[in-house]
Image 1 (spheres, rainbow, N blue to C red):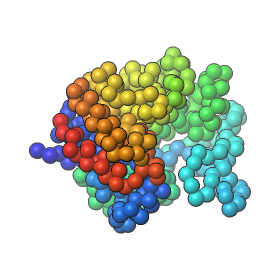
Image 2 (cartoon, rainbow, N blue to C red):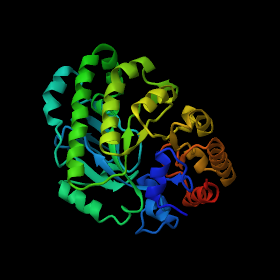
Image 3 (cartoon, rainbow, N blue to C red):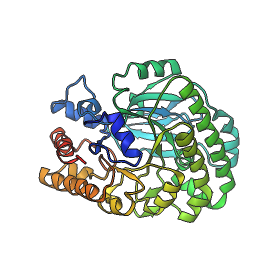
Length: 372
């Protein structure tokens, strides 16, 4: 008997094989705009159109809640001071990597000045489609966010996630990539204080969220701890400094709140997999192909302990259908052979280079071959 999307993903993340593999993805706004030009109905979101098993997301916003303001603007770009106090340059009219100009926290003094602003409150949440950009989410007072949540027709059927940053990602967003790595080596006590504060923040936000009647099924924990060639730090440093705080967060989400845990890291976090399993994650995502991640190998090595989500190359998704079919089939077949639990998904998010017809074909392949 076919399961609902909610039942399917819960089964898959609980260590059992459901009726079929899961389906989810995160097309960019430009991608969805292209797809509408190519036939996607204007009044239907891609997640609903393709009947994704994971569609909706409740975001927890861990900023310092500073007023956002435009510092400079031209026809080509905006320079924005965000809710943390980071100053960043964004290109207009196209997606691209923003250019950081100033980090909110560059010293302990900065942290001590801003620390008291990191308090749980009812303005810490947003609701929208999984994969959407932040400006597309419903934000504001919790009553407004809850009204959008209650009005969503797919809550009973699909697997609803909430989203929090992992400790490293939380601090990195306020310090920048280079600065946080320097602090790990030279001022670990500063980061420890930040992470202890953040653990309490997450717990307090959960109290508010669940107290207001939100009922997520799982949590997407985002932490970009790796790059193309491996971890950004040694496994020993990760275990000593970051792991204890990550485990506290996951213990609360998983054991006290009953949520399944999907952990996100770009790059190649293979060295951290044993530590992430010990922390309590249920699924690893997105398994970037260009970073050497391959679910065909991972399924045999870790499939008895983890579910996997992602690993369909966006470059292959944009190319000839025979190559796309070969990749999707080989990864589905490898997971089946290993008895591994798999959610079919791109290896990051879906760029505008992917035609609607190719994505439709990928979803058809998932339906055709993804039965357990």
